[in-house]
Length: 399
Image: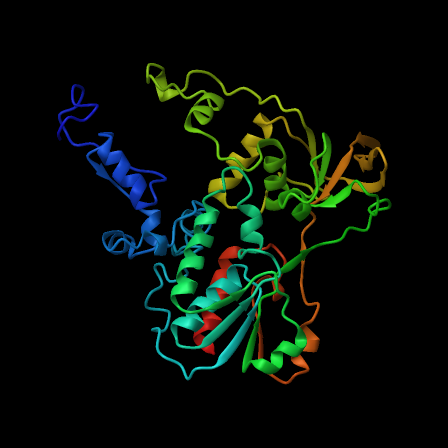
């Protein structure tokens, strides 16, 4: 055991686990004497070659677990076969075809969200000449937006993985570039993965200047208000509320322990020193949902409950089962249970869902080249990165 920190208390080896998902983190734990061994589970679903890549000094090529639980634990609790959001091959290795060489084609992929990234990688591995077009200045799409939320910074590791492996497989990436219909003439086939657009709302006053979209908030193009109403209580509405209060910076271990009243001395039964207190925020946030039910009701079983608990601790108010009447310059009027209610707000953030971005699809098709629509561009409802990664991977084998 060496001179471990706990040697006086224990005479048996200690194994540690949880959110140790990169080799340098594991090595630091061992060097610091915090454990004799590191155990991992979900990281090996995300990348079964984790250890091999670490041994070869290729940590940049590790497809990192992002702790979403959507395809592993959520599947298990719904009695489905576990797999992985960022690695559709996990636990389904025999169901996917082998990566074999294809007759090389010039393929354009239009949009570098999860579906476009996965398609580009498989297509390139099979020998196609792939050019990936992205209108933003970085790859990632909605995944990149989500990575701006404190607590989801590990999503950036997925983007790091794709930057490394796409470069290794000679994918040409053109950021800050919109694929134009006439570009279709330069390619044999097109994978249309242009993603989604925030859904517009039909409420009187929705065109007022203090009414903004969630993507404008998350990408920093608009400054947050102080008294904020969020329209929409799905995953994006919850993420937006978290971002408005906590920003992008990851929470430190000390902050986490303090906020959740974790007893680091382990003198209290269960390791909790007191009931967590509500967070005092400079922002007053109310989330509104037209339908009846809890916020995040379509989120996975393993994460929805903690998001709801955290919203309470952050002092976020929530109203459901209501009708929107109109937005004014000083707030929003709603009707709930037969009562008219006015909520003061200096900012209204729209998180009411998405629509498929099909702006140039028909014009691209007019050039007569095969066009394959995947990801959010195919189906925007209940935006699903798991499905996007899988569809991108599948089209990668089909062309």
